[in-house]
Length: 80
Length: 156
Image (cartoon, rainbow over the protein chains, first blue to last red):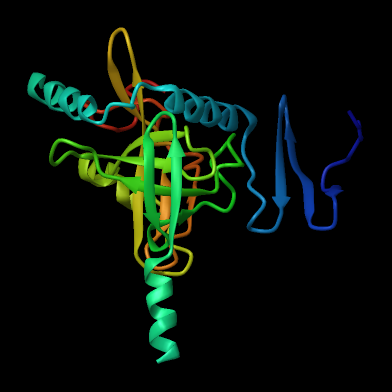
């Protein structure tokens, strides 16, 4: 891991196109301003992990037989 | 004449997908959806197609991978289930029509269906290019039960 020390307002550049600026430091919170091309996706780590995990779990679900999901759906609706 | 022949070629071009899980399907090229970045955590899954469930009308469809033939998702249109959801989506990049889908996770014991409302799939209807977007900062969950209203949690 590369560890850099930056002051308020200072910038880190990642490659040619991504910059990360320290906008605010308050207690244990840091606000960062990130500029990157539109095709670079930026996520909070925990959000990225949650979505990746959900995609993986959804891919493992028993959806092989096409009819049962619809059946389950109707049953769940009927219950409400 | 040559133009007509070319037209014929483009309308009949197909891709055959052989999957141990979902069977072998012939997909017309004009039905292929391209997720250039893949899905979150699955960047190698670029091309998909939508399959209708067997056994009559259903709110669900299947999003099946062409690049990874055994990868498939159950999906549904979240805007039908949660009408307020559409208003929370980012505007279309090209300004055109967008198809919204959400991935549904099927869990066993107990069998439950949840929708990933935090990261919907947006597909440009004209270009058939899609991406999985993250509604960061929204109150939506990756595991929204299909039978419950999707709203802000009671306690935050």
